[in-house]
Image (cartoon, rainbow, N blue to C red):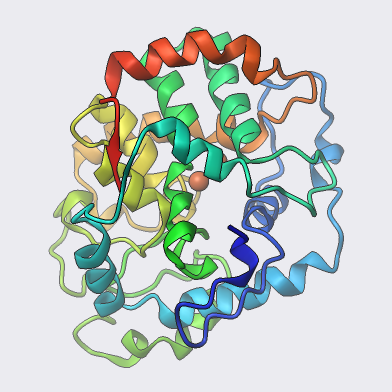
Length: 296
Ligand SMILES: [Fe+2]
Ligand SMILES: [Fe+2]
């Protein structure tokens, strides 16, 4: 399936040539690779075409316009019943593998390669095997594209809805067009929440992070679930914009999110081992934690 032509919703132009343009833009915002990929220089991560920016900008305009509190509740009701499809995890990877990243000047690797590079970098550094698994599955929620979801409801930085949008969120000016922006129920600092209520009570903008978290929540240790659920919540794990909603426990768990983030952003490696070589290890790992088929 070609995700460039999803037409299930009105007003859902596909400003990104592919989903990875969003992640390329994150690299532009946070171009400080850690040492996990020694054979790449920092400048190499910044070498993106200027033309990409307009697509990213339009992508965020749509994302910030349509991600309302009601939209999130509606999407949760629709997708968190997991009654769309059952398939082995490997079939989901086969689909993701088709989301080829045409525009990335760094590498022409596909989604599966990104997942393997993330998980292999985590494995090389000797982290627990469940974190390696998190590396492998963290973007699996992008299968939402299978169901015709527009780009702005699959990828993009995530943020709380139901309370004021932080000006630390990328392209925050576009929130002025969001219906919740002028709704007194949702536009105060705390909105529908209470101070330090805990992120589990907070509805995040809808996308691949929240979806894969719910899919995996019975199978993966809690720090891994935080990594899955909040890996795109840059306004918190990079900018600390929502401390007022978090508990001490959330902060402790965010140390894991921060540990994970560089593996997601900076682990591109042109010398990645082939899937053929890696397959036996990952089949064992998946079998250790996950059921034979997953519900989508
Ligand atoms: Fe992701
Ligand atoms: Fe990723």
